[in-house]
Length: 141
Ligand SMILES: [Zn+2]
Image 1: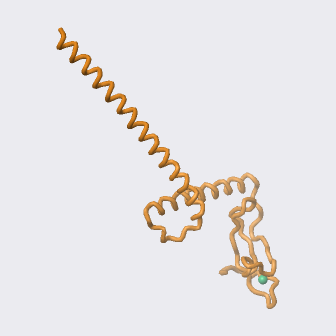
Image 2 (image 1 turned 60 degrees about the vertical axis):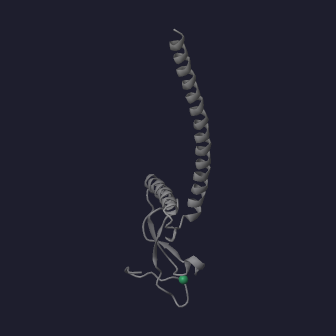
Image 3 (image 1 turned 45 degrees about the vertical axis):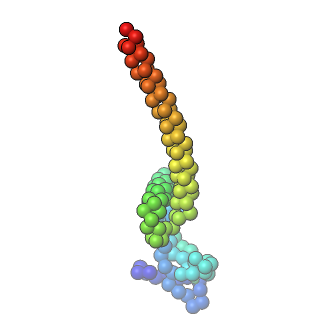
C-alpha cells in the first residue's frame, strides 16, 4: 500500500487500491492495482502499473515461476519426510502427489530388493556348486 500517487478503486466510498504482482501465465511479474477486496470479488477495479512484457520475457519468467513452484514442491516433500509438516505448505496437495509416487517407488524398490535377494541366492548356490565341483575334482585326483 506504500506507493504514490494513490489509485482509488470504484467502491463507495472510494478506497486506495493495493498494488499487487501478477503471477499469471500471461502477465508474470507485472504489477497492477486492484480493489482491496479483489480476493472476495470486490468492485472489479483493475489497472495495470507496468506495461506488458515482450512475449519472450513473459514466457521466460513464466517458465522460471513453474520451475520455482516445482522445486518448492520437492522441498515440501523433504519437509514432510523430516516430520516438520507443521510449516504451512501452500503446495501441500502437490507434495502429497509426489509422496504417493515415492510410496510407489519404495514398493518397486522393495520388489527389486526381493528379486536381487533371489538372484544373490542363485549366485551363492552356483558358487557353492563350483567350489564343490573343484573340491571334488581335487579330492578325486
Ligand atoms: Zn473496491
